[in-house]
Image (cartoon, rainbow, N blue to C red; front, side, top):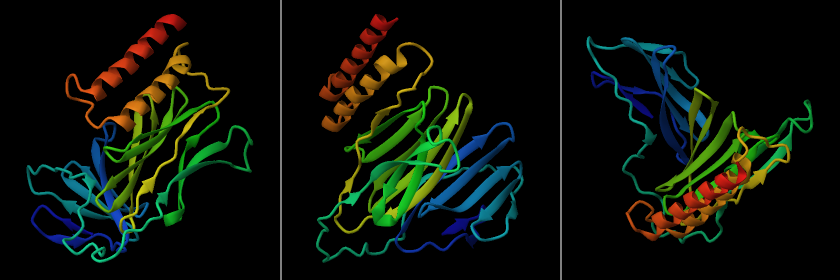
Length: 270
């Protein structure tokens, strides 16, 4: 991975294994008046750039932080999203498609050193890449997975009503990429994790997740009664229709019915 400095100087930031893929994401901390560009590759942070006033602090994995002084009146524009691979062959020419999918699953584990009920957490597992990603606590939480096969995205969120945490996945080209989000009111964190190269021709199989903890008690009487069923309604629309934005399209009408269902449910439970 190479960083391109404002004056056109290239700097090697990290060396990435050929089967790893990278994702960049921007976060802003208004309290510290700084913006950060983090790059994750193979589920680890490869480098982080922190813009403060007229400097950028570069923190590359395995190296000491260095400071880059910006030219006078310079502006900084971060480029986020999946990072393009160099224009080389993808290694799949003449290779038959693999029939076995890349399976993604979830499991619940308990921290043995803590309360066996309150310390239960949900994890996302990808055995193909020996990957384990913590999603969040399940005690008093509602955990739900949303898969959009047309946009090739997937997200599992565990939500207590006050705080939520999630792991997101996306398929971009030959890459299966991940990111994590967490936070509550006015406090949000985003961590791009990157991912791995999908074997030639393999499909990715995501799990169905819909778990409401018996002690889930979100604020407001209607969230648990109505919100969870509305999520299932939306899932059916995402799975069936690719066009959900065009006026009058079946996909948009399907989502409208879910909203109407949610409004009717909320009216009854108040």
